[in-house]
Image (tube, rainbow, N blue to C red; front, top):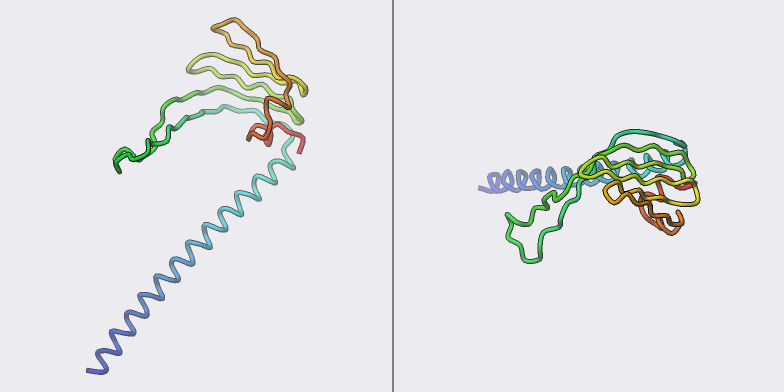
Length: 142
């Protein structure tokens, strides 16, 4: 009887140890992935001076407070796409092609926003327009 109890205790300990190791492994992987992402961003910001490409932007609406589990999943509400080109510091052209055409262009000092539907250009100081946004990281000087 004591041998059976010892075997049960050993199995429980192994399960607990296995679960603890799995949890620790996941934490290490998550920490490494986060550190890797941070390091990649730092490397990108310090090494890349210019780039161009296509983009797709998806806006996701947060679920309402008190939403049921089925409603708690964030759902895409709007998609935009277009092209971009930038040269640091502060020069870029960001062109939205869908759902409507709009061009954001910066010359290092000013940001020009051209709305094709309105046939209108809005001009602002670049520093005030970007502020502490993610765009400031992408197009800034460091």
